[in-house]
Image (cartoon, rainbow, N blue to C red):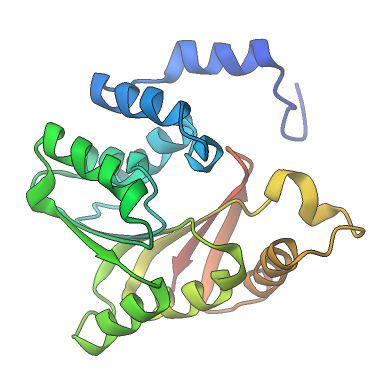
Length: 220
């Protein structure tokens, strides 16, 4: 028995995947291709993708927004889990990275569900707000440049409906957030958002130690 979250050894992590991961062939292929990319560390873990997909199913999400698409693992996992009538809106700055995502969306037959906006995400989110998408989305995933996490949350809270879910990735930042000697821009920005969320009465929240730390936020 334990009264705190276990540390995961390699053997225990492998066991978790062995007994619980239900990764489709196409998601596994995308993950394998991305593993050879120079920025492969930016891809979420497969168990996190499955966890987010389950959250989408539990919340009945049909309108999903993400900031930071990379090669498309999270968006594809969500598209495959929440139904062919779902709306997937993706924000990213890289044509190179998202070209891989586009390839797998097409192979999976979900291209018609996905709208990709290339450009700075704050501008895209502002555009969505100005085109009657306030309180529109059921679920949002934030996994982009850390310095703008606060801005993405502020805009996301306006775009997600009451009762909707915002998931923020990398909130533990490989443990750096707990090290007072680390004060670079990214770490400081994540710390600041974590502190803000802790006291924000507009939301309910839980920080889950999956992957690099995932904060789940329910808009009241």
